[in-house]
Image (tube, rainbow, N blue to C red):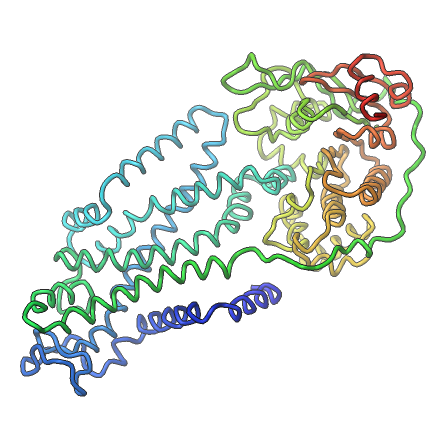
Length: 575
């Protein structure tokens, strides 16, 4: 764990309430007893002494003796080595099996394939059938069939807990898969395995950790329950369930200590693990920052080059991006199209703006080009040709090599595009590792150069920062640096200044245009702000209800729009 994260953890630990610290102390004691309990007891926990049979609590036997004359205190101290060990191993097995399975199901549910969704639905129905049985009865039947050995008990407890982690991982992954930073990771070339283990799994670990603690407590109770009914650990092994079962028949005779102390210990262990789960949730929650914006560090505002009065239209140059009759519709409703018959071209070095009101289909067009359409939507007609190749026909490996190196994107809300649990440096390295292997020193040197390229004057400090420690403008510049890392031939900017104030908008856009000019990249700006189109585009395409209604040079569009809808857009800005 990094020093900064460790410092935050220690501060939160120190800020816990007194009762929470008490339960953390009990948790530590239980863990120590799991390893050293049999060694610290005053007597051998499995040695019978008939002369002390059912002896009451005394100085010699502080908690009394059971019906075999065994010291209850020694057996209680030794019991976590059995109960907790079984519970921990069973829980870890259920985590190892259930978490990846939950991730896979979540990914299958978001695919457009009917087979994939059917497989995911079948898995969830099977889990529902398994969970329909009472957990204790189900575990007891499994142990009865397989036998009451320790390994079989662990397997049975793990089996009944697997659905918990499948559902939890599926739920968390389903919510994360729609997050912008996952889409950004896919857009920069990460394959599905990298997305699962670098972006999804680390982000659900805090939730899984909390559930692990709670499940261990439940598994201890389940293990004790199996032993209580005779299906679990057999005497004379010191195990709380069997101790309670042996002592329960004596409570009516007045020998209460034989059952009360083991039962009390079991309750404390189960309750402690449950409370520690809540404490861990507080300790592991994402760190927030009270730092003020660091926009004062931005200096030497870049000025934009003069607006070109005519569009870049040279018939002798092959288009970099060519869209032919592109249509996008929901999988089960082809007649309800999101995009209809989209046709346009972008040539090398050209700057094109796509404008239109919210909901007109601009973002869906960008996602179609990047091939990151939301689940349930797919291209029904047309082609999207980049450098002469249809993006829809590229394999995942070919598409991964294409992204970032030749085709890059800056998506809305930059802070959400950066992975929240890693530093800026790690975000850069994730992109690099998708395309090449570099020594750490060389990767860091390149990152510093990229941050300076986009106007960040203290790159070493920013590389150590987490996304929540960045202002909106700083995060947008970092996303721009990542997008321009390999000097792509086409940069797609979808609402690149969303959520930024006017001053920062100007700084980010000036930097973006200057960098694309230096790298020779074509620029596709998707925006609802006509002012951005006026200042930074050579050509304007107007979108309404999923189709283009006008294509014009920037100067001609603002001087004399061709269609009524365009005139209404301009009139709305003037008003």
